[in-house]
Amino acid sequence: MLENKEGQTVPNVKFTLRANDQWQVRTSEDIFTDKTVIVFALPGAFTPTCSSTHLPRYNELAQTFYQQGVDEIICLSVNDTFVMNAWAQDQHAEHISFLPDGNGEFSQAMGMLVDKAELGFGKRSWRYAMLVKNGVIEKMFIEPEVEGDPFEVSDADTMLAYINPEAAQTEKISMFTKPNCPYCQKAKTLLAEQGLAFVEIEVGQSVSLAALKAVTNADTVPQVFIDGQHIGGSEALASYFS
Image (cartoon, rainbow, N blue to C red; front, side):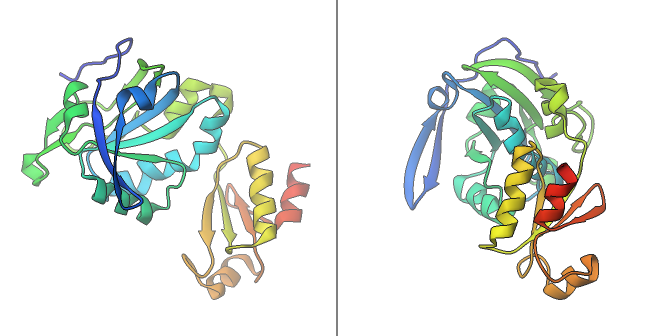
């Protein structure tokens, strides 16, 4: 039976990371003291649900979380730092801190270390999310103990609804962009001012110019979609909000 540790202090653990070609250590005290931190833990980097939904949505809503007073959003998994770094790069999750619990010490102390030997994973973290304030766990969302890999309550939208229901974002926003595009930056600023997260689709990286034309009937960027509705460029987006 997985234990809900609301009201308890997070385990005191040292995390070893590799950053800028140097070994670094972060401790629980460094991470959580005098801060409001979201931690979402998952079974493994590069795994399907983690890569397609769990991580991307937290990254997508990161700016909204920060506007609600969250200082850091941490993705934790029982993987080594090299795997976590490669996953961070692959996912372009620039708003998330990746914390490798390589030895499973934090997960074990949280009572969330489970046996995934049948999948060849060994010991891994159960999927959950928690809100930690000054080292004390205020809220935990623990996935139900059923077979498989349940993903029902530890998602970013559930966490945001707990922190501030009025800040919950219902709009699904995507934007086609190009690097170093001033009009794209203007559109991003407009969305940030509204507290809205979005999915960025980079033309030339994720899709071709021909695909942009086929989808939007335009060959300029940005091109913004909100809930499936084609809004247009930065000026059209400004008019939409006004």
